[in-house]
Image (cartoon, rainbow, N blue to C red; front, side):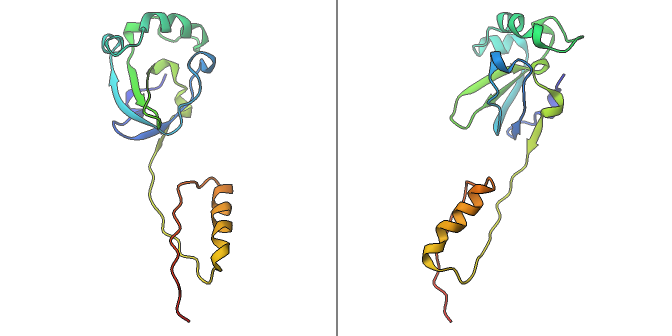
Length: 139
């Protein structure tokens, strides 16, 4: 079972869930908004008893079989939507806390039309948040 210390407040995380057919598997780069108990999860709109009943059969043997005996994580997706998930529903080994930084790269002697090739090369390698600033160089 995932633990609350794997979900630092305000950090970006990615993880997988056991019942992806029930909960989806769209938990990449989500922001941790908080860890709450079952009562708070219910006040925030999660039907914890019903969701537990649906999810429990997909969990590993020995999982807690009482929705009010474990904690929930509230996450915010990049589109602004929020989800609340029971910690036992999350595959512990899949949790990754993402610590990003910005990198500046300067490529010299580029013809004006080749900037698009640089963007394509970066995108092909998974880098999509890219800004190109063209500067003329004096020879």
